[in-house]
Image 1 (tube, rainbow, N blue to C red):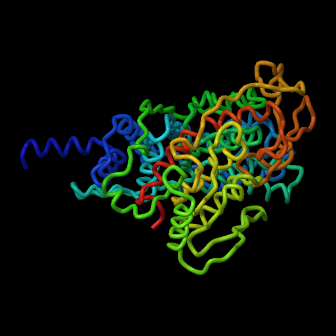
Image 2 (spheres, rainbow, N blue to C red; image 1 turned 180 degrees about the vertical axis):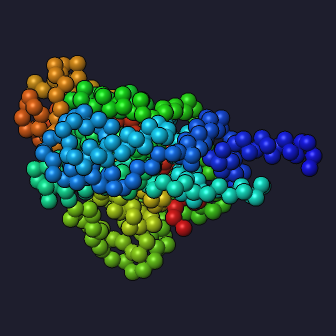
Length: 506
């Protein structure tokens, strides 16, 4: 073998499996090499290497001890909960902690996860999915005849909405059996047993219920040795920005900065908006986005009928079951396609659970009569953004008939403080004189299938807050309003990608 050939192979072996898989993806998908994506691939290579070589293994029996303790704990547990330092816990848990401490002393420190943030369409999800694929399935390096095997950790990849929906369902089930116990720790233990590596996409916090739950669940899971890889459009410092009682959430931001590597993708180029290739244009026999400026009313209707006819089976109405006993009515569907009006999907108090059920049921959906979305249609716009996220996660196609062109569908807006009921202090952290915890006493949150959240604070007693817009609460909604405006960029970017004929489930 020549010197140059030997040197080339040596240099290639210096690259990690994520980088090699990324370079193969570039070649096969005709994507453009991006330096920011390449840097992220290298960071994920480092994490993959540490997971392969880690010496700490926490047996499920130790987690079972913790779960048994929490199953009989009081309603409120100390906010300083840590697997490494319990005070006054049951003897079984103390033994588990001692065992885990000895494991850590004999091995390496717990692995840091990675929190990836940056603009929309820069490749955050692409690289995280590539990392997860290599961890789950391994990767074959054909040029060298090598196979890098999967890692041994149990793992899970999901959208953040999906993760939170699962958490809410578990909380609901636990509280039915233990109405006076705190459901958060045992739910966190159960999740930690199922996935020692957790990857989730599009982390965002928009309401107090999810803020409290995320803070406690993820802290406990990291204490239990779970490695988390997350993507977000916001840096940790801007999570739940402007939210009610945000001062209580701030320690968790410090936890993220301490326990995870924060990776910022500095690029602002949205690859989803690069446009359709000539190959795509040739395949696009029916346009997926219709509006009066490009198609007349009769023309749009004919095209929508043609899209619907691509589905299999007889036309019918149906009811789609949703988590926790809910359901969604579909007035027109066939085996693979559902037809909805914008009002049916977004004028009703539906949430992530409903949209995930719809996305999982159909390969494609048709949505007609979509207006321009902005601050004057806040609740409807928020639901539509969540719908797009759910469809994107399931690779479900969407055919749209709207009042305006796609580039004009979302109109950005600024949320401002305007109150008439004297509640200014509930959402402005600088006016909150204490750092008291708030406790979830009902069910809900923007990620759940419930429409109303009940919150109890130590100072103010009980108050009602709606995640779906049924009940207005002045400034408590400010963070969610700002997040919707911020998420318009992501939704517009995803719609551009979903317009490609290459999009969708096989």
